[in-house]
Length: 215
Image 1 (cartoon, helix red, strand yellow):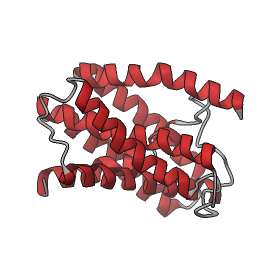
Image 2 (cartoon, helix red, strand yellow):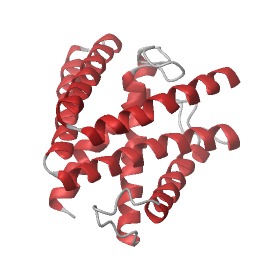
Image 3 (cartoon, one colour):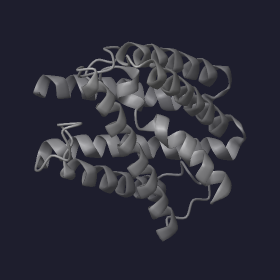
């Protein structure tokens, strides 16, 4: 448990800054990064899913999600901050869920994902709101975004966090059906690409709809 946590933290220290550098840099670097992640995601999905119809639907959805991510990041400069914002919500939700779930444990939510607890769900919501507030209050990262930390946007953060956690559960469901712990072993301490972006692939298409039709 402790060894896995150390490996997980070390991997995150490397991957998170690298990913943010690629996102901010944009252009061909970002496109190549997306393509590589897409390829590995599709390979992992192909390996864990046996049912042909579900496999095809999943492939189409993953491609749609990556296109949504590409569109959000590249449409204009402002959307880059939208993209960063969405990624941060997903990362903070994941970190908060992991830490709170392991610290407080408590009742499990479902047999679908036996490691998920109500404490973890609360931790995901709490961390995404708290740390985004701190980032926006004490850094100038989102100054160009003109984001006002009001009730409406707190609801938006909670909504994205909820979708991210639902995505996590859905991928966990398919992993449980396939009787595997992780979708792959590409990332030490984390598993495969899908293990890390399971929430994001559901958040990006929905966030795109929210941004262009409801905000």
